[in-house]
Amino acid sequence: MPNESYVYELEASPPGLYLYHSHVLPISRQVNRGFFGAYLIYPKDADILPAAKELIFIQHFIDTDGESEQAEFYALNGQADQYINLPIELKVGELARVYLINMNIEFATFHIHANVFQAYQGLGMNRDQIVSGDTVGLGWGERAVLEFFYTKPGLFLFHDHISEHSDLGLRGWFKVTS
Amino acid sequence: MTNRYVLAFLISAVVAVMVGYSVRTGALNTFTPLAQPGSLIPELTSYRVVFEPGKIIVDILNTGPVETSVANVQLGGSIPFSIRSFIIEPEGVIPRLGTARVTIPFNWGVGEPYSIKMIVATGESFVTDVAAALATPSVGELIPLAVMLGAYVGVIPVYLGIAPLPLFRRMKEDWLDLLAAFAVGVLVFLLVDTVTVAEELSSRLPIHLGATVFVGGFAVGLVGLILFGRLFMKKMSEDMSRESSGRGVFIATMIALGIGLHNLGEGLSIGAAYTQGLAAFATFLALGFGIHNLSEGVAIVSPVASRSRLSIRYPLLWGLLAGGPTIIGALIGFSIYTDLAAALFFALASASILYVVAEVIIQLAANPNASNNPKIYVGLLAGIFTMYLTSLLLNILAGGAS
Image (cartoon, rainbow over all chains, first blue to last red; front, side, top):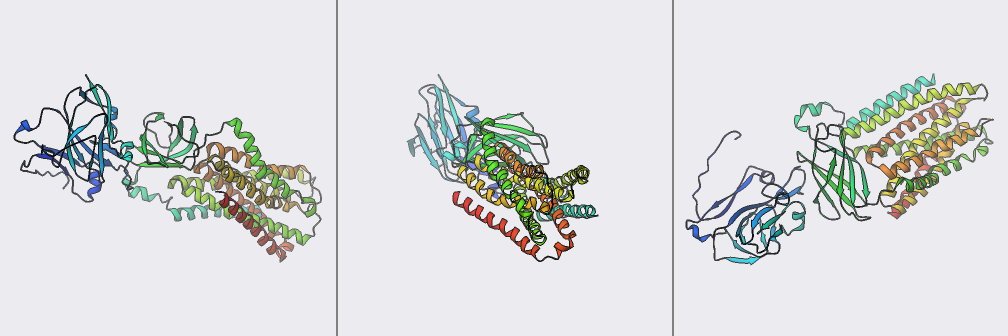
């Protein structure tokens, strides 16, 4: 109820990338206006994950006018085009680890330019299930953990390869410096 | 005596229009917004879209009950919407009834459909659709084109309708009544046509703006015409001593003025059709309106058909008064066509035609010979049917072209 609080207690197992969201009806309205988030359960043996610059990317859509099926924006982490305006800074050779969640109520993809990533699917902690590529597709609520590094400095685009999503804000830059 | 009837009739007409419109749309129900504080939602109306090389310019008006600001601009059309960079002047908050100009750098394509979506800071979105983009012509290119189209549609057909005046004047009295009734038929058709268009256009606007434009335009049009009529009558009474009866001339002039306002609206639609990339459609529209407008010329001269002497300057003036506004309308249609401007002109025209219909009916009814003449019903129906059939022809032509 409004102004009341509730503490959720969870058992931190198994390790992996998780998401939470409001289940107040109508759920789509709550979710499409940003009532969601991510949490991460690291494995006990931290050495499984090599040192990296860690980024959490939640892909989602935003319905601002509540009037139509059509989304006004597609966004990463709450704001359309935010990493176009403020590129994410990386160093040449620095490992980047992206914890990727699709909170869209539709299929979405994630694509990086001029590079190839290693994708760990499922909860992202099973280091045996590796897929390499430059595009990964995720259904509703699906997740992946991506690892990659750049070998040259420059501005590198990343975006949802579904053009409609990209055009409405699901895109950004990695700014790689030496 | 008759003036008092006219006034009473016109006041009732304004009230009827206001009540009718407010009942139909709920627009004038001022209690609703008060009862629902949540209904104070912003509203933006674009009143002009200009296509220039490499950019699209949209002029917007805050028609909502609260101040607002544009947070994001997206462009769609034949392809899905995408976020565009834009410049807004002045920057920041747009106060109530304030205006701003949004410039979108974009290499638009000729003939492409575009939808411009503006999202305000509180999340509501407003879309303006353009059926087909076409570079907005410069004034130098516009004027000759507007004059040509306007002349074909308005001036020439009206003069052609006026031209048989010498023939009309040789007709017997009871046939003249038929002619007068024909004029009433023409005007009644125009009244229904104009009111329908004004209502439709204003219903496309945000509800409060639409109501204001429709009822306001109607009221201003009526009051304006009454005032104009009084001034004109004063001037006419000086001439009356020289000419046998000024009344016919007065009514003919008022008809010409009313039809002129209506033709301003026609000019608007032709100009708008042209700028929306429908050049062929505009040509058919011009042709159809031309045939249609012949009967308007006949309607204008019907009140003076029985007069023995008439200075040539009057028919010349009427033709210009009734046909000339088509040129002005086409110019406006070319440059700033919007539902807002069009709704306003059609509302003004509705009022003026209502006024003229009232005047003509009163004149006809005041003549005991005419009101007992069965020929007036034939004339009335003939007037309505002529207009109906020519407008049907217009629709067929236009439908075939689009």
